[in-house]
Length: 452
Image (cartoon, rainbow, N blue to C red):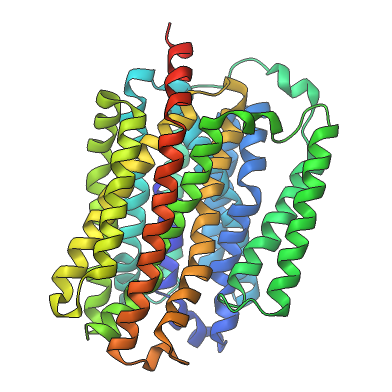
């Protein structure tokens, strides 16, 4: 769980150096990031389902091997497009690592302790996110951008050795394997998710003709996917699963909350630099407060889930996020960095509570042969929320500021954009809170049914 998050955040800081090294434009080097995210988003559900059928340990080892090999190839790639291809391959391995790690927790950890284990996974992801910019900056300054990949590759090798030694072996061939893998559904879902991801990233929230065409393609692809899943014997996603209000609520809330979390990453740098006048060298340090708080909160959040139950902690976390978002929307510029950091800490600590409790809720109430695919869907909902947030919340921020170029906007205009963006964020979390309260009875009923 740590390595995929690290490989996302560590690369962003190296894009200027890569652009200079390959004599490429920003629009070209951004594909180094997009290729990785697109591969994860498009394949994570299919990889999870394949793990349910072929064996999770076996497929996880293959995923780690692909990730490690692709990481090394990224570090030695002689051209930009070979680097982008290697990053896409790295994303394939990362999809396996993200989906199957969570499924392994649900399969191997005793139910009374599963909250702590989910909290630990969240902590590892947050540590990877927080460590990336600072570690990447040091490596690039000392050894150049290739070092960020060449240092990560040995970590992948170590992960492979540890996983092979300590993860429990797969059981006998699963009965679901006889029914076959849904290649048609997997292909349609991958194409649909790829079209949607490109639509919300390529034009950065402008939604010009290309984005609209991609959104229409995604809508058509989704319709074809639903039709295909109704007709196959062994579907990639059992559509009847969505009749479970707990699962549907968990996935929906995850997407909404992730959209809000991306607001802190999209709006934060501009607010700190333009509205508060922070020097570029300190912006990364201030923004790292969020992932650091999430990392420190993960394990205590898991213990709280095991003690109080998932539904209460979900509600507590969402209430905290509403308070933090409202605070971020209303805090005056005169409060300076302290006002921003306090609001950010409230949001990220509350997010850690929500994520741990929501992941535990979703993963403990499903059939054993569906853990991989549901874990993939949970990760997918988070990724789609992040992609949507980067586009939509960025567009709201830019529109509300009223500036044609946000990089040269006046401090008061940037502050206005920040207020509107986080006001919308508070609204989205309030919607998620309503969903959580509405599904509480269903959660209680399912917990009673699952209690021996």
